[in-house]
Amino acid sequence: MKVAVLGGGSWATAIAKMLLANVEEIGWYIRNDDKIEQFKSLGRNPNYLTGINFDVNKINFSSKINTVVKNSDMLFVAIPSPYLKAQLKRLKMRLDSKIIVSAVKGIVPDENMILSEYFNTHYNVPMEQIAVLSGPCHAEEVALERMSYLTIGCKNRELAKQIASMMTNSYTQTYVSEDVNGIELSSVMKNIYAIAVGICHGLKYGDNFQAVLISNAIQEMNRFCNAAVPHHRDLQESVYLGDLLVTAYSRFSRNRTFGTMVGKGYSVKTAQMEMEMIAEGYYATKCINEINEDFQVNIPIADAVYDILYKRKSPANTMKALSLQLS
Image 1: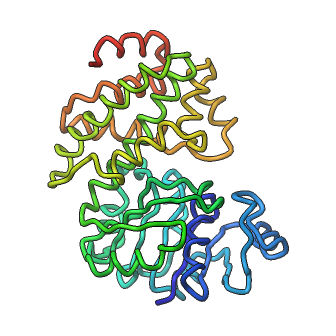
Image 2 (image 1 turned 135 degrees about the vertical axis):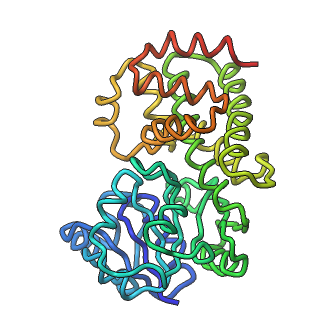
């Protein structure tokens, strides 16, 4: 099984680290040739998780996505969702014979599709060949080799176990699930709630309020997931609740950081410019709002974040109004 990583960011780098603990070599698509040359020279990613040292002899780098895809059986996709369509448009290779492992914790903008649905619909990849990778697992803690947890969701349970074995090591515990769509959707929504927590932090709300906010957020997530992708699931499991908690509270959370800046008074555009990484929750907020036009689920926290980010409503006034709706 020839394995490759698509993407050059922090999460792609963390995935490569975990894979190389168990496989002899990987392909790696990074779109910038200069960055590849720097990577080879330094033995590490020059821009992300620079503390991880790699044996570059085990990595087949290429800035040509078709070369990497052609030479691989399994693709770990870790390209931020806002850029995914543009990168995949370069593809001339078919994907329907490949195994796709989505590590994108976002939703495809404009399409309003979770990644499994997108690859299945637009690239004819059978659902049995699509897996999703979720946490709770921050790339930065993988770099530090702190204990982390991954869940691999796939309709094909044997394939999920195979992928899990590739990701398991001394500091990473893995689990498998068949709830592909639920894992993806909850991964999208938890970023929105992390932004909400960040906004409240920026507004100097205390721990008491943030605890109530997260308690309501998991209920909100449950309602929306049950309406959009019905499945027998327990949202108290770590892949749902755990991923929400770590994204909402961790100092490594880019979505929380983005929200904190907005709560402190930064404009959305200024906060985005200050961020060195993509806050997926910004794009997810708009997508979920549009998807919910069909389902009409009561999601006041996500609605409040949408009002702040896209309707330019006052963070202070919006969160004050939201606080009266929570219990």
